[in-house]
Amino acid sequence: MQVLEPTIDVSFSPLLRRYTLEEFWALPEPGDRYHYDLIDGALFMVPPADYPHDDIDARLTRSLVLFLNHEGIEGDVHHPQAAIYRDVEAGTYLEPDMMYVSPELKERMGKRRTSADIVFEYSSKSTANYDRTTKADTYLALGIRELWLIDSENSLIEVRHSRNRENRPVWEIRRYGKGESAESEVLKGWRVSVDRLFEGLS
Image (tube, rainbow, N blue to C red; front, side, top):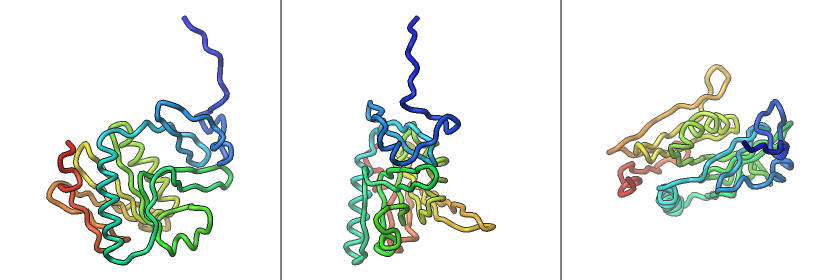
């Protein structure tokens, strides 16, 4: 039997501790390519990305940037470690796999990026449930207008649009499979072929 010394460095239950942004930024790195998300002061341990995360990111980035350039649409496309963060009573800090921020939103936000127009998450087996529930609902609360969830295991693209129902925000969900093209509502005219996005990645 091995007896380990108790540690107080990191507390994962908000009943024990809720973190501000400054406290979150001061935490030690978890190691093994894991990272932390912070949602209203609560820590979430996120496993490292696995195949084909990088290939999907490269293809989606190319498609999005080509569309913006072709249409003459301004805006910023960000990748980690660019984050969406805010600090009220407790901190929230998330690093989307990719996000688009329009000039209008950027001007309204000022120096702190507290939201984005579109967020993209590339889900794996280990992150799919978290991405579709806790993280997606946090993005909704942060005012994200459109969320793309990329499911490489099942070759699906899920596009969620923020709506108001009975004075509360909800996601309207559209799911696209083989032979279909996912469409953006925020960037009208931008379409992504499911077949082309996942071609050769299975």
